[in-house]
Length: 336
Image (cartoon, rainbow, N blue to C red; front, side, top):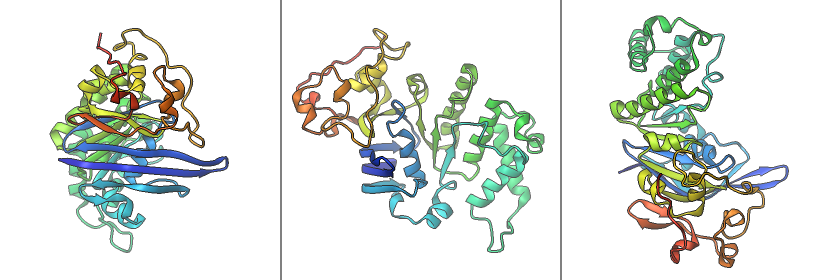
């Protein structure tokens, strides 16, 4: 059963240079209790997907068509007040990218995390005074910090952010995302600002969180190593489009889209012959006609410039958005 379903999502943003077609008929799913990774180069729309799910798109964003269903609730049809009171933070938790900027340096960690709980759990009366049991909230928070492997959790609540390492701050943010007992957590490159050893620890923790708390995790990353390590399924994005999606082992060992193959060939642990991808992601104000990857694709044909590809299911839960799959012209890459 899918906890989150994004179907035919098309989204544009007005800019000074023109209308940028940020997302173009995006399709993806997050099954209950699973970890799904979104990969792709910068500018491919990965973070915009998370913002769409959280309902924090900029005011100049225009949703042209499509739907986002979270636990059978149509996210795009909800007003901001309903999103803030019933979905964002309470049923969908968020782990930001930079643990050094996400916490306010002038307030103690305990105060900040307690405010998250009170706000998102709807525990404020009309006068702004919190109601409910402060002691029960504090006990819940201490228990969470312990599970996040924060040393001396009770004392940690009385410390300031600068008194924690980067990895410990990220653990605090994971605790904050879990504090209101959500069913889905979205994470925007949660290991980018951390050293390699700490990255591994955080990934192990996220995997344990999914198992212990029964949540689903949607994670954005540039690193195929992250996807290989913890993700059950992967969604490959290029220039605002879903180009391939499916079980991680299937997509990475038997890629069908040329862009997926190119990404794998950029990764030192998986590439048959390490190489870069020629060119850059095109501007989304005036993207190429037909297939958006055709200008960088060595397998492109005349039809790729005139006929937009459609996302097709090749195997169970394995879909690809490429005209070449019709003729079997794409070449799978074996793991080394």
